[in-house]
Amino acid sequence: MKRIVTFLIFLLCNVATAQHIKAFYYVEPSSKNLPVFVRGNLDDKTILLYVQGGDAENGIDFGRSNYPKWKRTLEEQVAIAYFDQRGLNKPLKKIDTASINQIQNLKDIIAIAKSLKERFNARIYLFGHSNGGRHVLETLGRYPQESAFVAGGIAFNTPITTDFSSKRYNYYRPLYLKNLALEKMAHNMNTSYWEEAFEWMMDRDSIHTAEDSKRWNAYVDYAFDPTKRKIGLGMVFKTVFARPYNPIKYLNNKDNKFVGDKLWYAEKKLWDENKQTPLWAILPKIQKPILLITGRYDAISVPEEMEDAHKLIANSKLEIIQNAAHESFLDQPEAFNVLILNHLKSLP
Image (cartoon, rainbow, N blue to C red; front, top):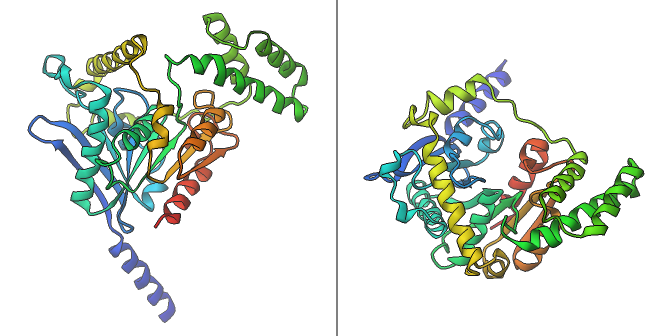
Protein backbone atom coordinates (compact mmCIF):
# COMPACT_ATOMS: atom_id res chain seq x y z
CA MET A 1 0.00 0.00 0.00
CA LYS A 2 2.81 2.37 0.92
CA ARG A 3 4.48 1.73 -2.45
CA ILE A 4 1.24 2.52 -4.30
CA VAL A 5 0.83 5.79 -2.40
CA THR A 6 4.46 6.73 -3.13
CA PHE A 7 3.98 5.94 -6.83
CA LEU A 8 0.80 8.05 -7.00
CA ILE A 9 2.55 10.98 -5.33
CA PHE A 10 5.39 10.62 -7.86
CA LEU A 11 2.91 10.72 -10.74
CA LEU A 12 1.11 13.74 -9.34
CA CYS A 13 4.39 15.59 -8.89
CA ASN A 14 5.37 14.87 -12.49
CA VAL A 15 2.01 16.12 -13.76
CA ALA A 16 2.26 19.24 -11.62
CA THR A 17 5.77 20.09 -12.78
CA ALA A 18 5.16 19.47 -16.49
CA GLN A 19 5.05 22.89 -18.12
CA HIS A 20 2.24 22.49 -20.66
CA ILE A 21 1.30 25.75 -22.35
CA LYS A 22 -1.50 27.00 -24.56
CA ALA A 23 -1.18 30.62 -25.64
CA PHE A 24 -2.39 32.99 -28.35
CA TYR A 25 -1.02 36.42 -29.26
CA TYR A 26 -0.31 38.80 -32.14
CA VAL A 27 3.25 39.66 -33.12
CA GLU A 28 1.87 42.98 -34.39
CA PRO A 29 -1.05 43.66 -31.99
CA SER A 30 -1.92 47.14 -33.28
CA SER A 31 -2.68 45.84 -36.80
CA LYS A 32 -3.61 42.33 -35.67
CA ASN A 33 -1.09 40.84 -38.08
CA LEU A 34 0.74 37.54 -37.57
CA PRO A 35 -1.41 35.73 -34.97
CA VAL A 36 0.47 32.96 -33.18
CA PHE A 37 -0.93 29.92 -31.35
CA VAL A 38 1.46 27.94 -29.11
CA ARG A 39 0.69 24.58 -27.52
CA GLY A 40 2.69 21.78 -25.95
CA ASN A 41 5.31 20.91 -23.36
CA LEU A 42 7.93 23.53 -22.48
CA ASP A 43 9.85 21.41 -19.97
CA ASP A 44 12.72 21.12 -22.41
CA LYS A 45 12.51 24.82 -23.40
CA THR A 46 12.09 23.87 -27.06
CA ILE A 47 9.60 25.35 -29.52
CA LEU A 48 9.13 24.20 -33.11
CA LEU A 49 7.85 27.11 -35.21
CA TYR A 50 5.64 25.40 -37.77
CA VAL A 51 5.63 26.99 -41.24
CA GLN A 52 2.56 25.91 -43.22
CA GLY A 53 3.00 24.21 -46.58
CA GLY A 54 0.77 26.15 -48.95
CA ASP A 55 1.00 29.90 -49.44
CA ALA A 56 -1.91 31.71 -47.74
CA GLU A 57 -3.01 28.63 -45.77
CA ASN A 58 -4.08 29.04 -42.13
CA GLY A 59 -1.39 27.47 -39.98
CA ILE A 60 -3.32 28.07 -36.77
CA ASP A 61 -6.31 26.09 -38.03
CA PHE A 62 -3.92 23.30 -39.00
CA GLY A 63 -2.66 23.12 -35.42
CA ARG A 64 -5.90 23.79 -33.52
CA SER A 65 -7.77 21.11 -35.48
CA ASN A 66 -4.93 18.67 -34.70
CA TYR A 67 -4.82 17.72 -38.38
CA PRO A 68 -1.21 16.38 -38.10
CA LYS A 69 -2.05 14.50 -34.86
CA TRP A 70 0.81 16.13 -32.94
CA LYS A 71 -1.24 17.22 -29.93
CA ARG A 72 -0.82 13.84 -28.18
CA THR A 73 2.54 12.96 -29.71
CA LEU A 74 5.15 15.63 -30.48
CA GLU A 75 3.46 18.22 -28.29
CA GLU A 76 3.81 15.91 -25.30
CA GLN A 77 7.58 16.41 -25.62
CA VAL A 78 8.01 19.91 -27.08
CA ALA A 79 5.87 22.96 -27.80
CA ILE A 80 4.79 23.82 -31.35
CA ALA A 81 3.90 27.34 -32.49
CA TYR A 82 1.49 27.80 -35.41
CA PHE A 83 0.87 31.12 -37.19
CA ASP A 84 -1.10 32.69 -40.03
CA GLN A 85 0.67 34.64 -42.75
CA ARG A 86 0.49 38.40 -43.06
CA GLY A 87 -2.73 39.58 -44.70
CA LEU A 88 -4.92 36.65 -43.67
CA ASN A 89 -8.07 37.02 -41.55
CA LYS A 90 -8.74 40.52 -42.87
CA PRO A 91 -11.28 42.12 -45.22
CA LEU A 92 -9.68 42.59 -48.65
CA LYS A 93 -9.79 46.39 -48.45
CA LYS A 94 -7.75 46.31 -45.23
CA ILE A 95 -4.92 44.14 -46.56
CA ASP A 96 -1.68 46.09 -47.05
CA THR A 97 -0.88 44.78 -50.54
CA ALA A 98 2.63 46.28 -50.51
CA SER A 99 3.62 43.90 -47.72
CA ILE A 100 2.37 40.73 -49.42
CA ASN A 101 5.54 39.23 -50.88
CA GLN A 102 7.89 36.32 -50.22
CA ILE A 103 10.71 38.46 -48.78
CA GLN A 104 8.32 39.90 -46.20
CA ASN A 105 7.17 36.36 -45.41
CA LEU A 106 10.75 35.37 -44.58
CA LYS A 107 11.23 38.45 -42.40
CA ASP A 108 7.96 37.65 -40.65
CA ILE A 109 9.23 34.17 -39.81
CA ILE A 110 12.26 35.73 -38.15
CA ALA A 111 10.07 38.22 -36.25
CA ILE A 112 7.77 35.43 -35.00
CA ALA A 113 10.73 33.26 -33.99
CA LYS A 114 12.25 36.20 -32.09
CA SER A 115 8.97 36.89 -30.28
CA LEU A 116 8.74 33.24 -29.21
CA LYS A 117 12.29 33.25 -27.90
CA GLU A 118 11.68 36.41 -25.90
CA ARG A 119 8.29 35.38 -24.51
CA PHE A 120 9.15 31.83 -23.53
CA ASN A 121 12.95 31.89 -23.16
CA ALA A 122 13.17 28.82 -25.40
CA ARG A 123 15.29 27.34 -28.19
CA ILE A 124 13.53 27.93 -31.50
CA TYR A 125 13.65 25.55 -34.45
CA LEU A 126 12.02 26.39 -37.77
CA PHE A 127 9.81 23.46 -38.77
CA GLY A 128 8.29 23.57 -42.25
CA HIS A 129 6.23 21.22 -44.42
CA SER A 130 6.28 21.29 -48.23
CA ASN A 131 6.54 24.92 -49.40
CA GLY A 132 6.86 25.91 -45.76
CA GLY A 133 10.10 23.91 -45.70
CA ARG A 134 11.32 26.06 -48.59
CA HIS A 135 10.62 29.14 -46.45
CA VAL A 136 12.61 27.58 -43.60
CA LEU A 137 15.63 26.97 -45.82
CA GLU A 138 15.36 30.36 -47.52
CA THR A 139 15.08 32.19 -44.20
CA LEU A 140 18.22 30.57 -42.79
CA GLY A 141 20.15 30.90 -46.09
CA ARG A 142 19.19 34.46 -47.04
CA TYR A 143 19.36 35.93 -43.53
CA PRO A 144 22.06 34.09 -41.58
CA GLN A 145 22.82 37.05 -39.30
CA GLU A 146 19.23 38.03 -38.59
CA SER A 147 18.34 34.39 -37.85
CA ALA A 148 21.51 33.64 -35.87
CA PHE A 149 19.46 33.13 -32.68
CA VAL A 150 17.49 30.27 -34.31
CA ALA A 151 18.79 26.87 -33.17
CA GLY A 152 18.21 25.03 -36.47
CA GLY A 153 15.74 23.98 -39.12
CA ILE A 154 13.64 20.98 -40.10
CA ALA A 155 12.27 20.83 -43.65
CA PHE A 156 10.01 17.88 -44.39
CA ASN A 157 8.46 16.82 -47.68
CA THR A 158 9.98 19.97 -49.17
CA PRO A 159 10.35 20.41 -52.95
CA ILE A 160 13.52 22.31 -53.83
CA THR A 161 12.31 23.11 -57.34
CA THR A 162 9.13 25.11 -58.02
CA ASP A 163 6.27 25.08 -60.53
CA PHE A 164 8.32 27.51 -62.64
CA SER A 165 11.56 25.52 -62.64
CA SER A 166 12.39 23.61 -65.84
CA LYS A 167 14.67 21.34 -63.80
CA ARG A 168 11.59 19.92 -62.09
CA TYR A 169 10.04 18.72 -65.35
CA ASN A 170 13.19 18.01 -67.38
CA TYR A 171 15.24 16.21 -64.75
CA TYR A 172 14.00 15.46 -61.23
CA ARG A 173 10.51 14.14 -61.87
CA PRO A 174 11.53 12.03 -64.87
CA LEU A 175 14.43 10.66 -62.79
CA TYR A 176 12.05 9.87 -59.92
CA LEU A 177 9.76 7.79 -62.15
CA LYS A 178 12.68 5.93 -63.74
CA ASN A 179 14.20 5.08 -60.36
CA LEU A 180 10.80 4.09 -59.00
CA ALA A 181 10.13 1.78 -61.96
CA LEU A 182 13.58 0.18 -61.64
CA GLU A 183 13.02 -0.41 -57.91
CA LYS A 184 9.63 -2.04 -58.49
CA MET A 185 11.01 -4.27 -61.24
CA ALA A 186 13.95 -5.30 -59.05
CA HIS A 187 11.42 -6.54 -56.49
CA ASN A 188 9.33 -8.30 -59.15
CA MET A 189 6.33 -6.11 -58.43
CA ASN A 190 3.92 -5.88 -61.37
CA THR A 191 6.90 -6.04 -63.70
CA SER A 192 5.05 -5.48 -66.97
CA TYR A 193 3.41 -2.30 -65.66
CA TRP A 194 6.67 -0.80 -64.43
CA GLU A 195 8.52 -1.82 -67.60
CA GLU A 196 5.92 0.15 -69.53
CA ALA A 197 6.36 3.14 -67.19
CA PHE A 198 10.15 3.01 -67.51
CA GLU A 199 10.08 2.80 -71.30
CA TRP A 200 7.51 5.58 -71.55
CA MET A 201 9.70 7.88 -69.43
CA MET A 202 12.86 6.97 -71.34
CA ASP A 203 11.15 7.82 -74.65
CA ARG A 204 10.41 11.45 -73.72
CA ASP A 205 12.60 12.29 -70.69
CA SER A 206 10.42 15.33 -69.95
CA ILE A 207 6.90 15.96 -68.64
CA HIS A 208 6.21 19.48 -69.87
CA THR A 209 2.90 18.86 -71.65
CA ALA A 210 -0.40 18.51 -69.80
CA GLU A 211 -0.90 15.06 -71.31
CA ASP A 212 2.54 13.84 -70.23
CA SER A 213 2.06 15.30 -66.77
CA LYS A 214 -1.26 13.48 -66.39
CA ARG A 215 0.28 10.16 -67.40
CA TRP A 216 3.30 10.69 -65.14
CA ASN A 217 0.95 11.31 -62.22
CA ALA A 218 -0.98 8.14 -63.00
CA TYR A 219 2.22 6.06 -62.90
CA VAL A 220 3.60 7.50 -59.65
CA ASP A 221 0.19 7.45 -57.90
CA TYR A 222 -0.05 3.72 -58.63
CA ALA A 223 3.05 3.08 -56.53
CA PHE A 224 1.56 3.99 -53.14
CA ASP A 225 -1.80 4.83 -51.58
CA PRO A 226 -1.19 7.56 -48.97
CA THR A 227 -3.10 7.95 -45.72
CA LYS A 228 -6.15 10.19 -46.06
CA ARG A 229 -6.95 12.24 -42.97
CA LYS A 230 -10.62 12.11 -42.02
CA ILE A 231 -12.13 15.49 -41.15
CA GLY A 232 -14.34 15.08 -38.09
CA LEU A 233 -16.94 17.42 -36.59
CA GLY A 234 -14.58 18.28 -33.75
CA MET A 235 -11.98 19.51 -36.23
CA VAL A 236 -14.60 21.64 -38.00
CA PHE A 237 -15.77 23.10 -34.69
CA LYS A 238 -12.25 24.12 -33.69
CA THR A 239 -11.42 25.74 -37.03
CA VAL A 240 -14.70 27.60 -37.52
CA PHE A 241 -16.61 28.17 -34.28
CA ALA A 242 -13.81 28.03 -31.72
CA ARG A 243 -11.33 30.26 -33.56
CA PRO A 244 -9.61 32.91 -31.43
CA TYR A 245 -10.42 35.48 -34.16
CA ASN A 246 -12.75 36.13 -37.12
CA PRO A 247 -14.92 32.95 -37.01
CA ILE A 248 -17.32 34.23 -39.68
CA LYS A 249 -14.71 35.45 -42.18
CA TYR A 250 -13.29 31.93 -42.28
CA LEU A 251 -16.21 30.86 -44.46
CA ASN A 252 -15.65 33.18 -47.46
CA ASN A 253 -11.91 32.43 -47.92
CA LYS A 254 -11.44 35.62 -50.00
CA ASP A 255 -8.39 36.74 -48.02
CA ASN A 256 -6.62 33.41 -48.60
CA LYS A 257 -7.27 33.50 -52.35
CA PHE A 258 -6.19 37.13 -52.66
CA VAL A 259 -2.93 36.63 -50.75
CA GLY A 260 -2.20 33.28 -52.44
CA ASP A 261 -2.75 34.69 -55.94
CA LYS A 262 -0.60 37.74 -55.23
CA LEU A 263 2.30 35.59 -54.02
CA TRP A 264 1.99 33.16 -56.96
CA TYR A 265 1.93 35.82 -59.68
CA ALA A 266 4.77 37.75 -58.04
CA GLU A 267 6.94 34.64 -58.10
CA LYS A 268 5.97 33.86 -61.69
CA LYS A 269 6.98 37.39 -62.71
CA LEU A 270 10.42 36.95 -61.13
CA TRP A 271 10.96 33.67 -62.98
CA ASP A 272 9.69 35.14 -66.28
CA GLU A 273 12.13 38.06 -65.92
CA ASN A 274 14.96 35.75 -64.82
CA LYS A 275 15.28 37.61 -61.52
CA GLN A 276 14.45 34.77 -59.14
CA THR A 277 17.33 33.19 -57.19
CA PRO A 278 16.84 29.39 -57.22
CA LEU A 279 16.85 27.76 -53.81
CA TRP A 280 19.82 25.65 -54.95
CA ALA A 281 22.02 28.79 -54.83
CA ILE A 282 20.89 29.60 -51.28
CA LEU A 283 21.35 26.17 -49.69
CA PRO A 284 25.20 26.36 -49.36
CA LYS A 285 24.80 29.56 -47.31
CA ILE A 286 22.88 27.82 -44.52
CA GLN A 287 24.99 27.61 -41.35
CA LYS A 288 22.51 26.01 -38.95
CA PRO A 289 21.95 22.26 -38.44
CA ILE A 290 19.23 21.05 -40.81
CA LEU A 291 17.14 17.89 -40.84
CA LEU A 292 15.64 17.02 -44.24
CA ILE A 293 12.83 14.47 -44.40
CA THR A 294 10.81 13.12 -47.29
CA GLY A 295 8.74 10.05 -48.09
CA ARG A 296 10.00 7.38 -50.47
CA TYR A 297 6.82 7.87 -52.51
CA ASP A 298 6.62 11.64 -52.26
CA ALA A 299 6.04 12.72 -55.86
CA ILE A 300 6.15 16.43 -54.90
CA SER A 301 9.32 16.42 -52.83
CA VAL A 302 11.04 13.60 -54.68
CA PRO A 303 13.94 11.91 -52.85
CA GLU A 304 16.31 12.74 -55.71
CA GLU A 305 15.85 16.47 -55.05
CA MET A 306 16.34 16.09 -51.32
CA GLU A 307 19.50 14.04 -51.84
CA ASP A 308 21.03 16.84 -53.91
CA ALA A 309 19.91 19.45 -51.37
CA HIS A 310 21.54 17.43 -48.59
CA LYS A 311 24.86 17.56 -50.47
CA LEU A 312 24.70 21.36 -50.62
CA ILE A 313 23.94 22.02 -46.92
CA ALA A 314 27.10 21.53 -44.87
CA ASN A 315 25.48 20.60 -41.55
CA SER A 316 22.52 18.52 -42.68
CA LYS A 317 20.99 15.08 -42.28
CA LEU A 318 18.62 13.40 -44.72
CA GLU A 319 16.00 10.83 -43.76
CA ILE A 320 13.79 9.08 -46.33
CA ILE A 321 10.78 7.45 -44.69
CA GLN A 322 9.70 4.21 -46.32
CA ASN A 323 6.02 3.65 -47.19
CA ALA A 324 5.28 7.36 -46.98
CA ALA A 325 4.29 10.06 -49.46
CA HIS A 326 3.91 13.86 -49.21
CA GLU A 327 2.32 13.83 -45.75
CA SER A 328 4.86 11.54 -44.16
CA PHE A 329 3.71 12.64 -40.69
CA LEU A 330 0.35 10.93 -41.42
CA ASP A 331 1.61 7.93 -43.40
CA GLN A 332 4.25 6.94 -40.83
CA PRO A 333 3.59 9.06 -37.71
CA GLU A 334 5.72 7.04 -35.29
CA ALA A 335 8.75 7.02 -37.59
CA PHE A 336 8.31 10.73 -38.30
CA ASN A 337 8.02 11.71 -34.63
CA VAL A 338 11.04 9.59 -33.64
CA LEU A 339 13.15 11.29 -36.32
CA ILE A 340 12.15 14.75 -35.05
CA LEU A 341 12.74 14.01 -31.36
CA ASN A 342 16.01 12.12 -31.92
CA HIS A 343 17.30 14.99 -34.05
CA LEU A 344 16.50 17.52 -31.33
CA LYS A 345 18.18 15.33 -28.69
CA SER A 346 21.33 15.03 -30.82
CA LEU A 347 21.89 18.78 -30.89
CA PRO A 348 23.76 20.65 -28.15
